[in-house]
Length: 156
Image (cartoon, rainbow, N blue to C red):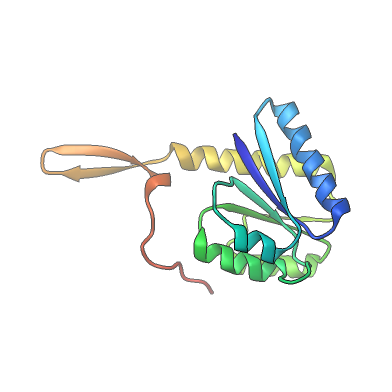
């Protein structure tokens, strides 16, 4: 199951992205699920993980997407994050929170599909990667997805 969080303050866009996710699931014959959050505060206060992708607007009430993404990275540094915004000039700030990609509204379904294909390919590679652990007389292959970094990542 491919799980997507839609963090979008405007009902119109949230409806559109949810429709795109359903269409993507139908076309790719991949089971998908989406969950909607109306602003960054609702999203981060309820965050419990389990998402493959987070689609997040930047301009939202209560807590903007960049602040929500900063707090998200304190809880989950690995989830794929795509900013979806009308503020193209703000998209560059997404690198501060390790955004996977960006979409500028209005978004065409074709471009949306390309971005989701890119995320799924990335996740497939990440889940398929392994790391060899050698010990006294043994070797185990550990999935890279199971390796956790004990220290915070550096940001520039």
